[in-house]
Length: 287
Image 1 (cartoon, helix red, strand yellow):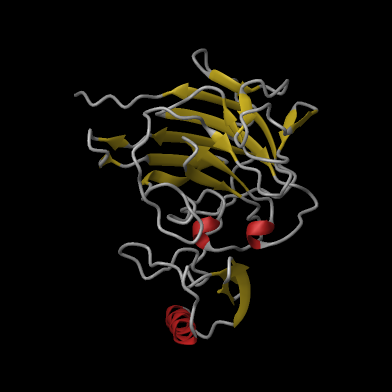
Image 2: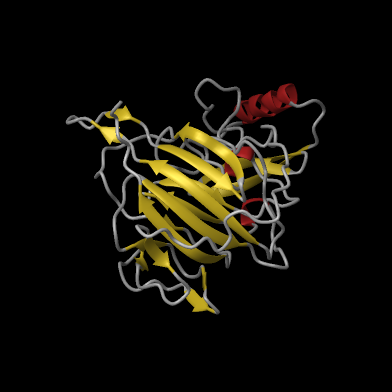
């Protein structure tokens, strides 16, 4: 990775000045390998402007100047504790994590199960079964009292096929870069709205995911798509992934199997989960 030089930093700051009138800008440097990377804070939002531009956009990956989505207060309830349909595959019913394995070593999942709730700890987990096109129901609860800010506040994630992330984060009355908010396709597409509930309250994800398709040469013939409903509010509407989710870089595709495990992320925050089930939802291209 090339070290960032002063002219590049000046350019990125000027970009921020153009896109947002008179922001308050501070710069901190974080060490990645041997490089010192400039992390900007613009109007209280930490992020980067030395990253690539999103295709067809004026915004950099994790750009702190990118506008925050509007806040929408969700209804009192939507699908909390929704019973799984008859054809659903139950991945967590409050009893144990027998349907999950440690993503790193393939051993038993190391998350805690207490009072019918799975609490993230020690490492990412992934399902024993593999999936392609699916409907997912999942409920999560952010830690209370809240701790940290930005990406350090209740961070987790849902990784379809272990590659394509829908972000989990505590964004209730809290800011972070738009493409890393709750419901973002991480590093790619911000949510259409911030429909988060306060930390300590249960929240629901109802998600329809369509796996990408590849031809015999490994080229993408159809990208991955996702529709995300957070607490009854549509925040991604059949949105395409640009590729696998990454930090500080554009997504890209590499050919893979038609079915892969679903994964949940541990990001040093104890996020709680319950009532997780999926249904296979194949795309049928017929009239």
